[in-house]
Image 1: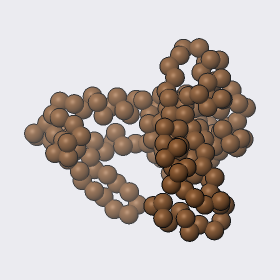
Image 2 (image 1 turned 135 degrees about the vertical axis):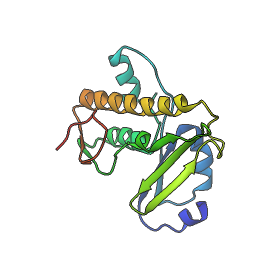
Image 3 (image 1 turned 120 degrees about the vertical axis):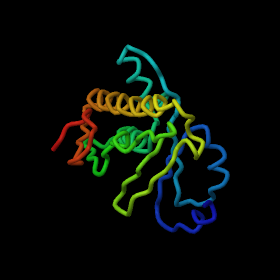
Image 4 (image 1 turned 90 degrees about the vertical axis):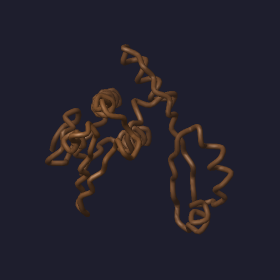
Length: 173
């Protein structure tokens, strides 16, 4: 990957977690590429003002459960006043089932096709651990709510333009 980046002849910003900054900066020797970072520390506090200050100064992130959450946070840090989400359905939990052997199965539907995966056989979960997957889903939706609160604090807006999205934390068009 780094060899491909050396050939880039246009301006590019690469955003990475802070723990990787030194390694990536050493590997990228291209004046067209600017490396920025976000602090991937999750800060837990019930006091919104403290959390928002930590987020504003990149001391913490509302959550990095998926690339959407990180991208939203980074876009807000870059000062985009309105951010539109397209294709963020966040409905994976609808595609999870448990088979007769108590194995967790995911029917992964995308525009390019359907893939049926046995998450237990793949080693992600043991029988009886559906709750772990559902906890991840809850964390994702809590992170969306946290990002929504941070956007309001900054005077920015996130608009969820995905018609079939389960994300209810952001305004709809």
